[in-house]
Image 1 (cartoon, rainbow, N blue to C red):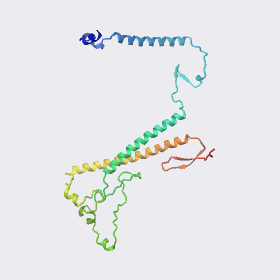
Image 2 (tube, rainbow, N blue to C red):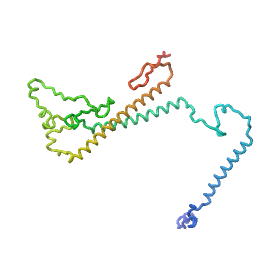
Image 3 (cartoon, one colour):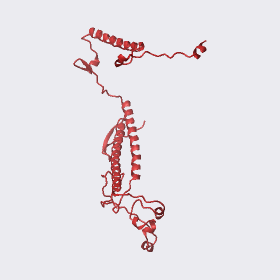
Image 4 (cartoon, helix red, strand yellow):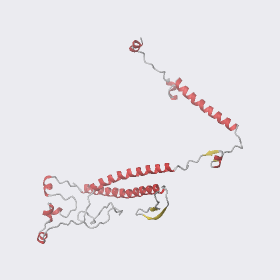
Length: 268
């Protein structure tokens, strides 16, 4: 019988909507909505009643020891939220901070590698200003400072070969590109591949602006990498200082952070 009842088509249930004259009041409240509103209202009234009774029967001479470390302002209890955390919790939080910093260092290093691969280092002949610039990962010099001259040394067996040495033939390029230190295509490449060059002075200017922006981003990431490395090292030191044993400060490292030495303890 139940299967037959389910097989027959039933009338769709439609709830009554709010009349057009009261649409400004929102949806029409149903009984389930009223029950939730009434339950919330009565719970608040019961809590207020309990607080009134508690204040009515309060003992003015009541004392417990926690009152020593708590305070009130104009009758309002002020709760201290900067309570000291246990040592295990602090060590866990610092380890999470260290892992977060290490993650961002790895992301930043990958972006720096992509920037370094996309940048071309220009020499004196290729730059209009006549300066040679270098970008070194191990130095914190400012952007586009003069760098040391780069040299390309070729070794030969005899002095006669050195006198007859022709860099154009050795590098397999054209004489106009032999002094370049980057982007020096071979003759075969020049014959097969089309040469792409800026069509106008405005396009060349845009390329230079793009290169300058990449240089600035690279230097900014260098500084950020240095600060993150110092912060990670500082967290390692703080974690080490939480260990037991006598220790003393013996100096300062290259990042300006203190170096500690622990007293050797005899193993039992």
